[in-house]
Length: 267
Image 1 (cartoon, rainbow, N blue to C red):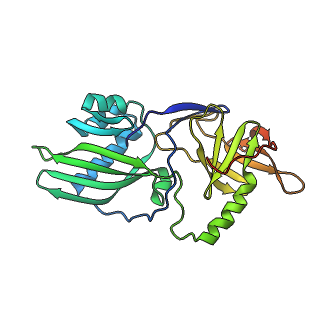
Image 2 (image 1 turned 90 degrees about the vertical axis):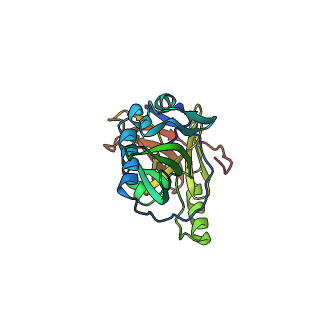
Image 3 (image 1 turned 60 degrees about the horizontal axis):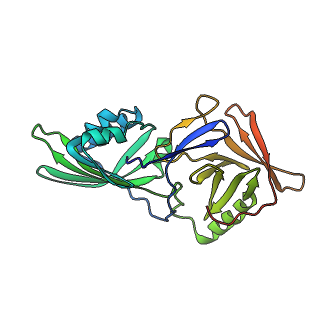
C-alpha cells in the first residue's frame, strides 16, 4: 500500500524503516467479502509484487496515468509509482470489505495487515478504484489507503478491563538509560533519541514484549534480521528495575537500568 516518506532509526544493532505514528482509534472490525476472481486477482498480484519488492510489477497493476496517495499529495503515472514502490517488502495481506462493478468501472474497499496477525487485526484500510481494459483485465486507477492504530483494541474489551490493563502496564513506564517506555491507552510504546516516532510493544509473556513492526518497515538485525524482544527485570521487591534486549536464542543482547525519571503518559 502507500508508503509515506520514512526515516531510519537505530535500536541497538537493529535498523527499522518506520512510518509516521498514527493516532489510536477504537473501531469494529468488519467482515471480509468474497470477490469475483478477476478482482481478487488484483489483490493477490498486489500482495505478491509487494512481498517480493517488485516496484515495476506493482506499477504494472495500475493504468498508465494511475494515482497513488502519498503524504504530500498524489503520485501519478507508472514511472512515478514504480519509483515510490522501489523499496517495498513484507508479507502484506489484503482483504475486501465491499466492492462494486459497473461495465468497465469498479472499486474495492478493503483492509490490510501483515503476516499471520492479519487474520485477526488490521493495520489499515484502502480503497482501489478500478478500470477494465479492452482485453478484460482490471487495472488500478487510484489507490488510497490510511493506516490504523498499530494495535487494535479488542472489540469486546470493556472499560473496566482496560483500566486494569492500564494500571498493570504503568509498571513498565520509565526511562532505561535513554530508552523510554511510555503508554497510550492499553499499549506500551518504545522510543529512544534519534527515532522519529514511537513504536508499539506487544506483550508475549510475563514481563516480556516484542516490537510491533509498522506497515512497510524493513528490518535488519544481528541474527538473520530478527528484532530482539524486550524483557523487563524485577528486583527482590517485585519492582521493575531494568530492561533487557533478548535475542531469538534467548541470550541477552544488552541490559539497561531504569532511572528515576518520570515520563508523561503519552507517546
